Image 1 (spheres, one colour):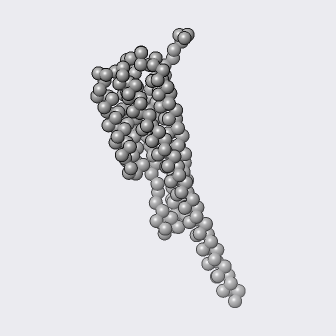
Image 2: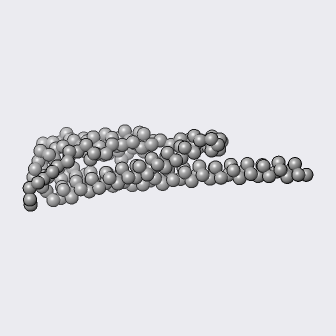
Image 3: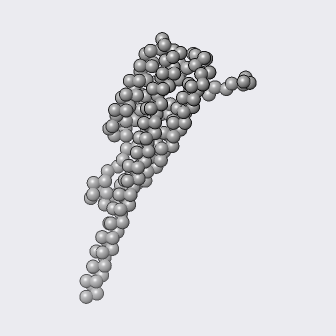
Length: 188
């Protein structure tokens, strides 16, 4: 009788242990989904900002049509990208590259750099890029924690049994990180 009780207790403990690991995997997976949603929200914020930035530049730099068109096309591709984080990151990197070219044009037009509307848009873009980086770091931390559960013993046994797979990181470049810093020592 005692032997049966011990075996039954071990089975119950094993079941509870498996249930706890499964729940940890579900929580980590849901945290990744939530973090990805935050990244997506910030990317959409960028997508909404870019046409206004293009229009501001267009007013001053009408002969820079190829760069302006490239930004618009890259934005359209990035919006339409709904695949894995890696495939979306490729489209985002193309967009970031085109935005860099757009910002390089601005250096040739001092009157554009002085335009209040453009400066406000540029500040908003910098703020948005910072927010994208913050949400990307949050997403990456959640993916790291989830992947650790999926790869580590003993939770990997539960993960394999219930079909949990490693998540991909979302690696994009920051549009502003390579933009040269402008120092203006003149008093206004």
